[in-house]
Structure formats: structure tokens, C-alpha cells
Image (cartoon, rainbow, N blue to C red):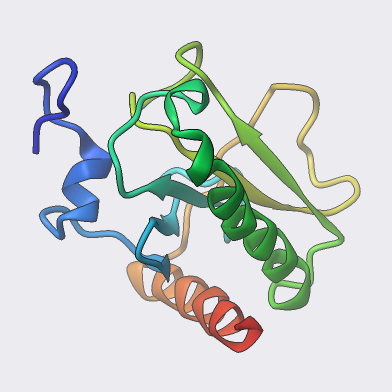
Amino acid sequence: MADSVSGKSCVFCEILKGERPAHVVLDAPDALAFLDARPLFKGHTLLVPRTHVETLPDLPADLVGPYFQHAQRLAAAMESVLGAAGSFVAVNNRISQSVPHLHVHVVPRNRKDGLRGFFWPRHKYDSDAEAADYAARLSTALTDQT
């Protein structure tokens, strides 16, 4: 699917339309969350609005609250389901934004996990089945919260 601004193909829009596979964690009318294909840590989730916008300033004001309520729930799930001590929640706007579609990173964190400043080592899933298990566990926790 092409985004409405550049006409270029948007990976996240393709995921939203089911044209590209993803391990879905949250499927809501206004947003979708799925595991990052190159996670900082296992469980690293990306939250995207269903409407194609490039940056946080582009997101309509009436969608900001509901969007970040999803991020809040994801952050809680990192602790309750994955046993993380906390989470890292971040948004890049253009700079360091690998896909030009707004997305919030919600990453499980633990003390001495190796994440220092903005040096972010990536940790791969051992298999597609392991990634699916992480997605299912987080998705179940989000369903249980509602």
C-alpha cells in the first residue's frame, strides 16, 4: 500500500492491510501492535496507528490519548507477562525512524540488560514459533486487561 504523502510503499500499512506478515500483539479499531522484526529484547513491540501518519505531530489531537492508552497497556504487559522490571517507550520523528509511519517502541527492560544510552544491540527470536509465543502471551494479557 502506498502512503498518501509520498506515494511510496509503507511496510506498516502493508502489515495493517494483512499484505505482510507480523506477530500481532494488539488489534484495535484505531491501532495495531506487533513484534519488532529486529527486537532490542524479546517482546519489543511496535504500536502503529491505523491511519497513515508519518510523525507524532501529524497524529490528529483526538487520537493522541487513545493511541497512548494502548502504549500504556503494552508497557504494563511487559512487566506482568514477560517479567520485565520496567519498559522503554520511545518515538522517533523522522530522525532514526526506519519506517516513515508513526510507531511507538515498547521494549521490556531489566537492570543490566546491556542497553546503554542509544547503543541498542538487537536480539533475534530463536524461531518464528518463539516470536509467535511472545506475541500470543502479550496479546492475552492485553485482552485480560479490558
